[in-house]
Length: 206
Ligand code: SF4
Ligand code: SF4
Image 1 (cartoon, protein in one colour):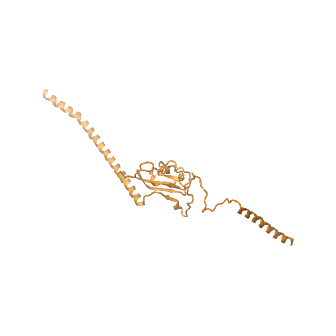
Image 2 (cartoon, rainbow, N blue to C red):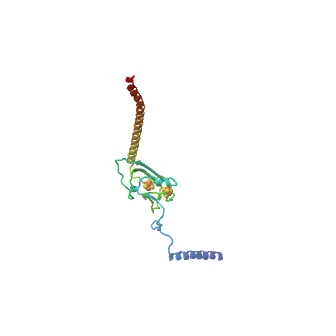
Image 3 (cartoon, protein in one colour):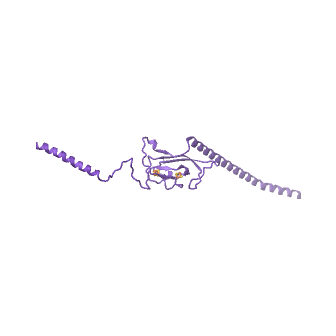
């Protein structure tokens, strides 16, 4: 019987200890926050999601070259002489159409190495850190501003322009070669003509 009352006493005493702790916390400063409604301040130079300002991108590929995990894919097409792509805000002349600029953020290790070599400061880390997705492919960010059709057209123009330049170069080389051959042939003929002329002049004296 005494054990029965002891158990009741222990139960009440234990509950009171718990309640004491609970009530004590009601009057102390909270160490937790109501995330996501309330968020911690994050450091100024934090490395989170990348962003590319395509207005300033010149398609130089420097960022992709330094990426240790190859998560940046850039494709470009040379602009035609008749196309003026303008300048970046840093004064760099834009000569290439950026037909593809993908960052697979699922592979990114947030090293920040891509940010430093950019000559126009257009790729940078933002303070956005909440970007989970249900599908893996949704983590591939596409920054290129051209539509698929426009990109295909710019690429086709660049290919055609390159072909035309190569054909012109080939024709110029052939013309040069032909001119050299003709010049050599003319050089060969000169001495023979001279000898004949000499022989003709000597003939009347004999
Ligand atoms: S932060 Fe590092 S891993 Fe991520 S894209 Fe830039 S270079 Fe690649
Ligand atoms: S380094 Fe900068 S300018 Fe060059 S391709 Fe990358 S984002 Fe564009």
